[in-house]
Length: 524
Image (cartoon, rainbow, N blue to C red; front, top):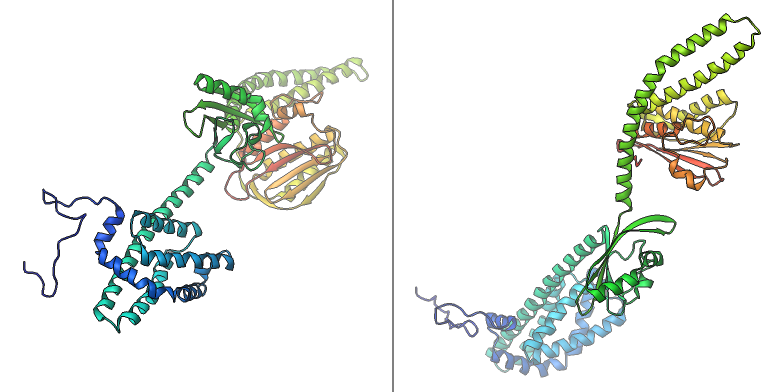
């Protein structure tokens, strides 16, 4: 094929000289590749050096004009912390112009330009400003070259302009390539930090002096404050964790023997909250890290397992209770009827009628217990719909007052999704329990999705608090211990929750929570 008129094809310079097999040799260095690609050669270098003395006298004006333009644009101006930083950068730009025109254009020059791209990412400079900034600088340099060479040698002016374009393209290629590389690295590091910060474990690397070299999740409760690299392990981690796990001892043993040490369960109390941890100490052979400490919080997992076991236990208990209740109910009804017939046949004033009356009372109590057993065993189905919580609370208080003659306050208002009948039974049980426990004042506080039954009674001892929802646990002399378990079961049927808290008045607060939408809130 004939060459197009006016275009002279030249052989490619090194490193693109043809190999013995007709292929192209790979570039030795990226900077050599860039110079070869745009055709930057020794002649270009000489032209730039020749231009430098003519730029020197106007270099300050070029820099001042450059930053005057930059500061007009908010996004570009936002990169700078203050005017003092701008003044320092003006000196940096003057050095950059010197290096641009004087060289040497070697591998060190290439690395300096790469750092500029990295700094642009670090300070948050949008990439378009690299192109616009280069355009402004090259306009001034081209103008100086044209004004000097046009009167002397037109061809020299055009050649100098070509050399300026070539070095400008090389500068942009280096800075933009590094900019993209640094931005991708920054993005990946951001994703890594997000991933690490949400892992359910904590990992610490400890150096040979027993100091923390680095750590994941530095803001969780395991650390007394912001973790700083270089802190001794016993200062970086919560003292409770270090002491209970005997971490310093295990760390020394693991690094001495070279074997991993696993502590499957370490129970600690951090900030008043019991936690269960699994800790592994793994020796490392690294210049910066002598060991890795892996800490996993098992508290929620163990709690979930306990709830699952409790649910299974309650299911078996419910089946047994239903069977026992059915076996007792019919004979109990027969006994009750017989006692009533016998008592009715006795004359008025017969002392045996008093004894039979007491028997009848105990039969009724057993009947009530059988009813509770069946309620506990029977599946509960809730008809959830929007309900007025204040109305439900007032209804429960009125029913409780009718049987006891006492009164409770209802404060606030709000709505939730639930079964009004079941909620009424739950609140009735809680209000009656408060009075039976010795409370003088009961306040029912209502808000959207919540009802708190608060009393000023003696409260529940700390050692018994975790048992109040267990079947058959009661502090009453005649209680069945099924009231609260049944109430919690009703709340679960409504996709809600029932929890015990300490009242600010010294008594107990039972917190009822219901969803305000179709989403459940149950944690029981």
